[in-house]
Length: 161
Image (cartoon, rainbow, N blue to C red; front, side):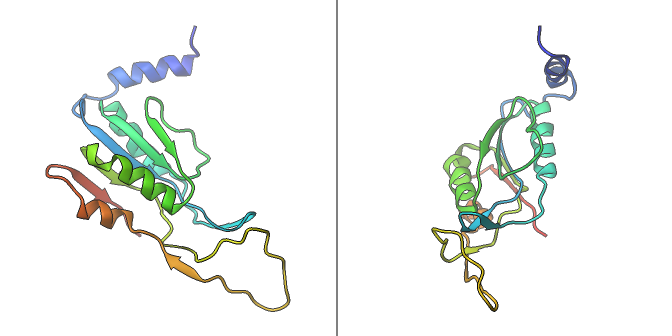
């Protein structure tokens, strides 16, 4: 017999909400991205992914076919949602743009890095006397690319701090 939580998830999926999104494909992004400096260090932010995960769950409960593209998070993804794990801003760009044309609704709730190190060291960077600087380059703007390629009738929602 399935675990009680699994049974509850099936019941909630059927009964919790009106199925006003049935037949819609929804893509949600969530969490941070991590941009490698060297094999042991990276630049990231404090995004927990909670908002994107909650939006994905709400769309699923309303009957949508949901894909969640998520950066590294410590929370459990909602049930009945296809999860595409990513790490970097480039990974997220590639994952999102690969399936964006087939989505009815795209909700960009992830905290994607705006910059990435210009060069990633192959080995751990050793400590030296004095300061260190890390040249950064701009990452591809996912929301801008989606907006430029938005198909008629597609809903695109982006969040920004």
